[in-house]
Image (cartoon, rainbow, N blue to C red; front, side, top):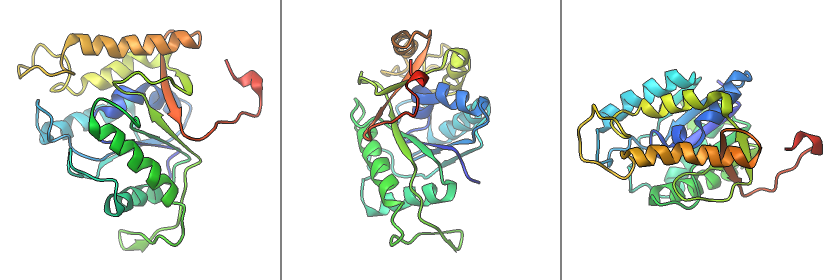
Length: 238
């Protein structure tokens, strides 16, 4: 299945935190969107890989995704090397997205920046015909997305573009809360972590308000781009 947008996320729940409003908005516009999680988040203090699998599936239903799969790379120890780049290239050539979203290039969690660089390199390499890949017994054709955006995670990074997600904020929140073991949930009693505090959840909403305010909206999601962005009509811009 060809997707319009493919979201790369090193941990299940990264996409929900960083760009689920934008996912919802474009699905409502008739676009096909999928997520490829790199790891099962098995090093997380709370929950387990099996529970994260269930939570990711529940979130996918809330978002209305057209596809979601997990590469089962090693949480915390994957590398930006040929072996891992080829795994991502196979996904890019399988889904042939026009736009890719991926992790922030610098962040509090070291996996995020490494995953952002891995996705960026794979997007370029996927367009080279001399790199041969095979999936399900069939040779794949080269494919390079038109755009690769990085969603903004824990660290504040000045965005290059902001998407108005105001109509979708409640469903965004629901998709995040699908990860019951990870975020603030009085019914789930485990060791408290940085992201399980009520303050962290409030900061996610606060960030969305901050980005929304910047473009005259109530809620927004911000993205960075290594590529300069162009527009045909200046009146399309806010």
